[in-house]
Image (cartoon, rainbow, N blue to C red; front, side, top):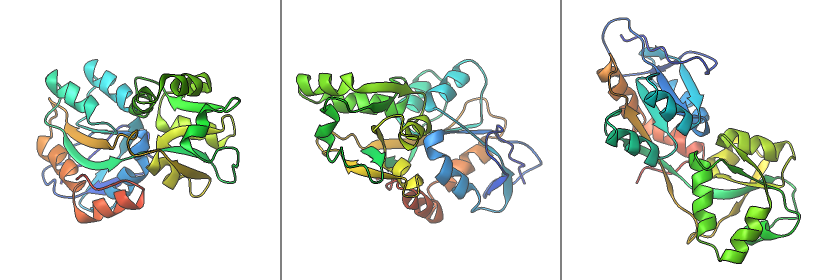
Length: 247
């Protein structure tokens, strides 16, 4: 059986099936917005031990470009691994889930009741930085608005954070009144946050994708990890975390 050893940010060993082979190590780097379901999924398959690392999708991509290569990259965005594939650094991306964007506010908040109210004077808003998926998606939404409304909302942006977890933390701490986040981030808050719908004509349906990183010593184990994301129990875990099926 492969002994899968990823980078150190997960708190405990987790497992996946379908690997087989000698004692070896597999490194899995995943987006922070996927931490809860990826950790849960990895405990479902008891044949192989693995540890996981979590960081921003863009930070993982930068590490891959600089030669610090994991064996598997699990991204919150299809765009990032597709770009890496065109650069010859990873294999073909496999979409395993989708997500949607919402306005996240603290439970009990009454001063924001709709997406349009993000333009009200005095609202404090957090977004992801433009280079990370959650920030790029927010910019896509704002780019579809009438100019005056987009300018008013951007004037309320008080911080742009390096990943979705950091954006959520700003709302939870009361540093800002609202944020544009994934629906799954609201689910993960265990009731601390509530979601306000973003109109569907503005809202990009995001795709989460996983890839085998070129040069891995364990391509079969890496491919097995990615296949495990599509198994029924994995899909149940993803949907319980607020994600949507891949198609």
